[in-house]
Amino acid sequence: MNPHCPCGRATALADCCGPYLSGAPAPDAERLMRSRYTAYVLEDEAYLLTTWHPDTRPDALNLKADKPAKWLGLTVKLCRQLDEDHATVEFVARYKIAGRAFRMHEISRFEKIAGRWYYLAGDPTGS
Image 1 (cartoon, helix red, strand yellow):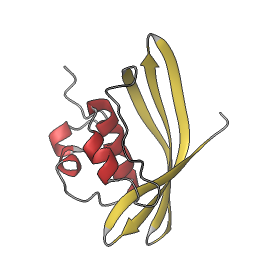
Image 2 (cartoon, helix red, strand yellow):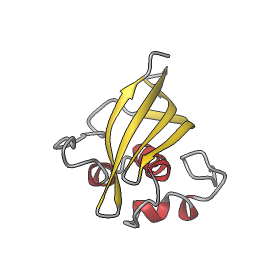
Image 3 (cartoon, one colour):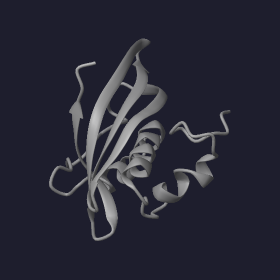
């Protein structure tokens, strides 16, 4: 069993993304993004929906109904703080579905509302 957090940091889940998954606010957009990746790995739909911006949040995700993804890793390429309440995080997430490998390269946009960061939307990159 891997003792490190699924987000890729060399830290235990309990000391990394665990507190955010348990309700503590992420202090910045990068840590929210990493904790959301961890939530996908753990199929924690409630956390994903809670941390999704209310203007773009879907009604449900139904992760368990989809073909299961085996998440292989996350690389955070760039984080930009645009102003006090807006940031972007560029990342690459690798995964497999039914033995076929995929990679998601995205620039995610985040907004802070009342002291909490939320995932607003993602823009896939061409690479």
